Length: 158
Image 1 (cartoon, rainbow, N blue to C red):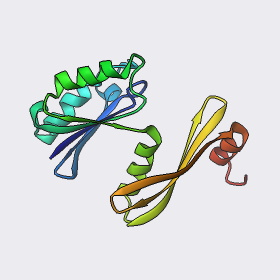
Image 2: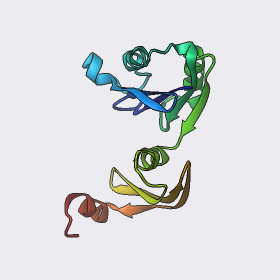
Image 3: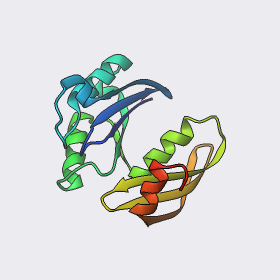
């Protein structure tokens, strides 16, 4: 099975390809074209990852896209993806769940408590959940003051 993952589409866009459960390639778009273009698909990264994985667009069975991924209505992005990957299922993944999954599934643990913390503007958003084998379940979320979030990120003494 070939899975193509897309993230950072509103900022630092990147692509990764898994083939039969093994990571074959992961490339940030700006590493290839040296130009920052927020929004849109990372076409050079997609082509490079597929080439390194020895796969074609027709062989991609699933395209996983991390939300947020479009300034325009999401249906427009689905249409673009459907045109480029006609045989693939399109899976939309929530931003924090993608962070949690990348930490847990790469770990040696069969079970874990996962916490993600993102800084955005004057606040930080946190999500907590539990992960077991191939499942992640969110158990809590909230917005915390920036003073606390900044303190946690910048100083171990807080």
